[in-house]
Length: 249
Picture 1 (cartoon, rainbow, N blue to C red):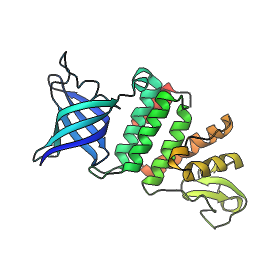
Picture 2: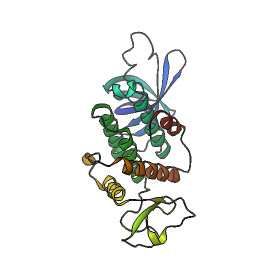
Picture 3: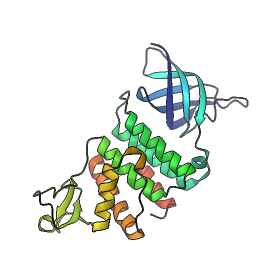
Picture 4: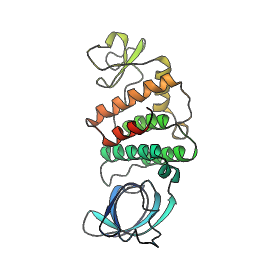
C-alpha cells in the first residue's frame, strides 16, 4: 500500500460517473494494472490527454487495500496523436490492446513486450509503417513472448529441413511436403514468405521492422500470423473483426 510512480501505456479506457475514467495500464514496472482517475473530464483538467487510450504517460498512483489503484497525478510523455486521428490506426491499436490484455496476467511485468508495443505504435504514428506489417510483426512477436513460438528451423512433424512448403497452426510450425495433410488447415508457405517469417522471429528488437516484402507475401503472412494467433488463443477477438472491416487486409 502507498504511493507508486511508474510510466505506463493506457490500453483500456472506460468512462464512469461524472467525468471519471477507469483505466487499464501497461506499466513498465508492474505489468497490467487497473486504476481510477476522478474528475478527468472537467473543462480545465490537464489529465484528459495523458489518460486517454494509447497515451504513454508518467503516473503517480495510490494503492489502497483493493486491486484498483487511484491516479493522484499523470503527465503525458507521448499521446500518439496520429493514432487518435485515424480510424484505421485507432482500430489497430484497439486490436493490439485486446490481444495484449488477453495473453498477459495482471501485475506480471513484461518490459520486452511493452517495448515492442510502444515501438510499434511509434512506427505507425511517426514513420508511416504499413498497418499490415505492424499487425504481422506484433502478432508473431507477441506469440513468441508468450511462449508459443512456432517451429521454423525444421519440419514441426518429422524434423526434415528440406522441402518446406507449408505452415500448420495445429502442428505448431512449418511442414515439409511429406507431412502436409489436406484435411488440416495447413497454409502454403512460399520461400519468400518463409524468409520473412524467419526474419521477423529472429531479428534484433531495433531491426524488426527493417524488411520489405511483396504484396503476395504480405497476404500470405497476414493469413498465417492471424490463424496462428487465434489457434494459440483459442478464442475470437471483437476488435479484430472491426479492424478487418475498416482496413483493406
